[in-house]
Image 1 (cartoon, rainbow, N blue to C red):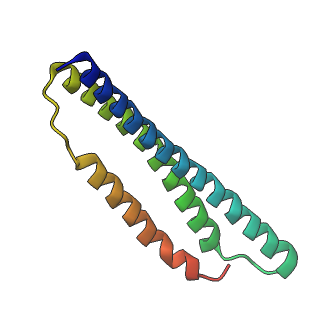
Image 2 (cartoon, rainbow, N blue to C red):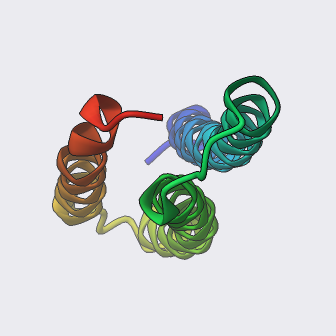
Length: 124
């Protein structure tokens, strides 16, 4: 493999790593935003409605928020692991693409979406 080809492969590997990093930062940001929005709704309901707040609304927003932040952190760790693995394979000139991480990430995001959907229809 020529130096130019190797350089291109390493740059593509780095761009892929940065895309995974952006995804994880987005998940963490959504987790923080969900938590703050849940707190906002709770405070609004307390001050405007003078009602007792059901426990599930707080638990739901906190659970989803914590799940998103933890998943974002896991994605960062997996991205670093994948970047290093691909780097070594490029250097050894025996890279074989794997879709495992893509399937795992997509499956977890789909699962989190399915779990969080019922909370959209619960009264605040």
